[in-house]
Length: 67
Image 1 (cartoon, one colour):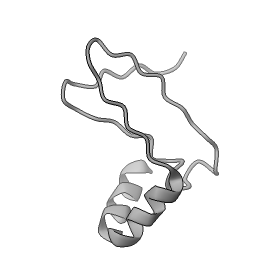
Image 2: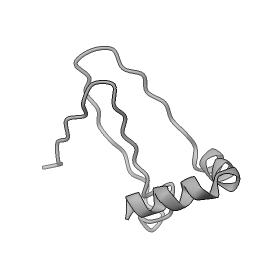
Image 3: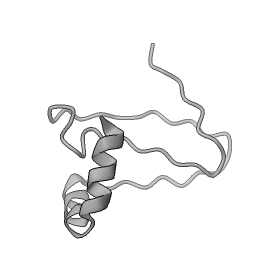
């Protein structure tokens, strides 16, 4: 059974390990169920890597959080 996580109202979540190359390149998915209105945004790995070139400090922090 997959773990269930309750994300508080007005919060966000992200699956970072595949973007940061920590999962050995494996693709991952997340199933999400909303009790109300939700916005869902996606970011390609290429776009993520382009953004991290401009924000190296953010990249370092995200990598620490994902490990």
